[in-house]
Image (cartoon, rainbow, N blue to C red; front, side):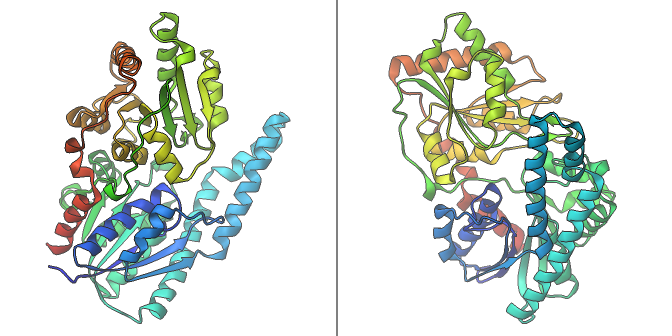
Length: 444
């Protein structure tokens, strides 16, 4: 069935730069190419609205994109949080424990989480008023909403109750407990989420582990919920393919992204990699002067601190925060791309957005999965698609990691380049293929 009228409610959307914007910008683009009529309701989610030129050119595929400011308290809160963060960092340097305590209280506590949930509610009400004005009670065949923030799902709930759509698909890029323990989430947020799970016609998640997590966290009947949850992986857009062969003589590993902290602990801290490199240097399998580690992101000081523990700070090259285009070019010019995630009983199925960028540029992937749970979904995909090597800290993979690094180093040394990933192994992660999977959910 073509000519379907689809409304995508995605607060993060093109042309804003960021990982969260890609999923439904790309799915919407390829649904449009398949003959569907796509309208979008998005928001300005950052104070500094950085434009991604690669995503901006995709906007031509959408019939209408309405971008609405969040509730004014949202931006005031971001400004306040940024000031508090700077205050906390300053207090840390001055060893002011009282000031650090104040900063910590405002940055991550029960009251702040309730506050943000209330702001999401106010933003949802504002966007509903925009729907009434911009679309004049237009009825859509399908409404797709994507979390986070929860305001998107709240709008979907409104449209479902008002019979403004025939079908509502609720998408979860993340589960509620991704960075905050589920038991510490506000009851208001849990109540809203339970209504979303109950009232939506279809639920989509980005991994099998996330499906497991969503069912586990829900208080609804598990069997009924399981039947309407479908895994729609994230992916890559072949039209963005960057063709750059590594030109550095040095063996180069790139990491583009953030280090994520939960309850004061970094969950994707790649200590195992630096330890392995250090030992390979000590055993004279790798020369320190022949290896580079490129970092692009906002956490260089943390990465530097880690490297210093193994006397490896000299191999680091800091690019700072870069555009997605620059990130893709950096990864394309590297020999290996590092992906660092976690897998534990509280959070399974984590697959970084950078994983799909690595597939796009077809560079071999080195994935490090921290946590006490083995048999991760990421490792399964990497092994089945022959994309590189995955070390799970829960498994006895350390010796294999060192062997793999040594082999790739020798390959670079002898051939001047490390072989790329075969494109035949990753076709199912192309967004044109993924859009076909979403189309099946729209039509059934």
